[in-house]
Amino acid sequence: MDRSPSSLMSIASIVLSMTAVAIGNGMMLAYVPFVLTRSAAPDWVPGAAVTAIAFGGLLGCLMGGSLIRRVGHARAFSCSMALVILAALTISLGVHPLLWVLARGLYGVAANMNFIITQSWLNHASENHWRGRAMSLFYMAYVIGLGAGAWLFGQIPAEGNLAPIITVFFTTVAILPIGLTRLPNPPAPSRVSIDIPMVWRASPVAFVGVLASGGLSMLVQGFTPIYAAANAVSQQDVAALMFFMQFGLLFIQFPMGALSDRTDRRIVLIVTCALTIGAGLAALVVSFDNPLLLMLVFAIFAGAVETVYSIANAHANDRTDPADFVPLASTMLVAWSATATLVPMLVTLLTPAFGQQTFIYATLAVALLYALFVLFRLRSRERVPPELCETFEFRSAQVPNATALAATEVRAVSPDL
Image (cartoon, rainbow, N blue to C red; front, top):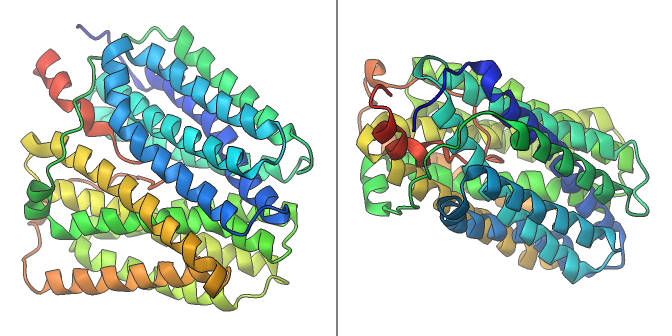
């Protein structure tokens, strides 16, 4: 398949679609835990809803490639959007805890399918000299969309079903740019090829880092609104908290990423884990009567957690042969989804015994164990020579990396890539 000349403007349809999706997703990430926590639902239900998203994501990353190979990117995108709409409509029927958990699982399936579809499409549509900028634009637009959706939740009543209806609106709008795009459908993405031994040989630090980041990201992003709502934080303050957490990602990740380009990435990972631990300890003691300080602490907390994911990915690419990028991406995607499911599930089970702060304790434990592991590896293996390192790119654990899943087909179609 020949690709027509492309530029950053040519991928605007994909970025606009996923930004609209992110606004709806950001609203639901704040709305569902807030309402479930304030409802008469059993205490385990809000945590189960977080776990369901991650488990659905695991299914989505295993199923997404097969669906794309069967019907193509554009039709698969419409199908995944239909799943998001069905999930939101289910939630709009009223607070039925088990149905809401199932709906969040359905959203999780659609979310990872969306990422595989759009990232492989961007990978194919972008030229080498601006592909990094395209991916950074995609990630930033999505993260800002999440924050905007959370902020929007604070402007509407939590009672009733207005939030899921607005989510349906933004998801429907997201179908239009993709339906009207003139970008050709790329070749089908590579199959999910899991090769844990290869990834471990290439970089134990990166592999364990992605495992850790799956749990860290879902704990902080998923349980923070539950924690805030359980402590009688107002709807507007919960929305503002979720909004500022996304911008914490931007302000923490960029300086840490730039530092990792200039020094051993493993040292930066240890510093990032230390920042996570410091922010987590502050989160344990900060008063809910001081919302501005609360937002600052949790913005740093979320930013540090998400940065572990991006630097671990960069470190994996530094140590992996380009010929192995496809199994690397597949293995990392499944590994992230697996721990993003298991760790929140464990925290959900332990929360009734240890209280609402359990997710903070778990985050501190994971960050500390990972920092100790990186410190051990730092003493046993030399750093990658700087001239062989790739330039750091903005990434978010909320948008798992699927960009390399189309690499084999892209090279086959266009050897110049």
